[in-house]
Amino acid sequence: MAVERIALQRSYARLTPDEIAVKPARSALVGPLVQLALTVLAAWAIAAYINTFPLWVLMLLLIFVLISGPTAILGVVYNVMGSAFVMERRKGTCRFQQGFLGLGLGTRDFVPFNRIVRIEVGGDFETELGSGDLQDVVRWEIRLVKDNGRVLPFASVLAARPLADEALKRANIVARATAEMCGAPVVEARLPEWASSVDPPA
Image (tube, rainbow, N blue to C red; front, side):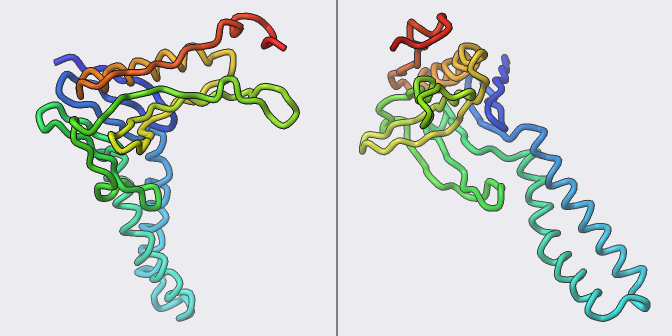
């Protein structure tokens, strides 16, 4: 079975014939692993120096372990196995996972295919700063539009302006794949005609 991976902003899209999932990038695993290491170190310090450290230090370490330990473990599990967005052909649904302290816990939104009006890509390529200059970093956003008009972004791609075209290609690939799976129309983004020139039109 063919599996395609498309790099996104702090995540990647895993495309298969039966499922599309937006998963956290492997680099996002660093934070939870560091937190878990600090938790283990604090637990070791409690056990090793229980007769040496003052009571208030032991209490602080214990509180840190009790709070940090569970969230660190959940963070590691989510970054290894979790997904922020899942679309499944067999079930005919897509799920948006709930975010909590960077974790994907629970379902925030559940959308059946028959309620999807379209998949679209939008961006800020032509958005100007207060000075009138164009932004140096361009963001492309992939969105699901429901039949009630609600717009649900589920992935994005960031790139420096000179690389905006390559980032847009990745966003459009993911948009086309999700639209094909759910049977909805796709509205891809396009760079303006003046994009190949040095300066935008006056």
